[in-house]
Picture (spheres, rainbow, N blue to C red):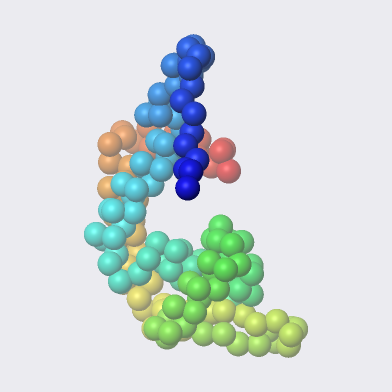
Length: 152
């Protein structure tokens, strides 16, 4: 039985390939920054995932939404937001109800327990943002957030 093995390159590498440094690439740096933020989040809010907190926060911010609109508002695809809503519903933090304007549509809204949990976690969420941005001075933080928004 033969094994497929990659044939090693015998020619000299391209000069531009030699200049490529992973540590200087935007995707790598953003992933590392996100990993740092997620660790800070887990320390500050251990009973919700960042996606669960985002969904609950958005519902508390804007009120009841169709699940697909909640997904768009929190930058989650349909499968992810469904799982997030299912887990929040299992904890009685959100509930579903028919849309009074269109009975075919289902709205998701925060329950009183969801509101209460959100209210008790907002200070921690603010601290998480502060801790995530702490290596930057105030001017750098403002610029960084503006630049991130520009990338979106």
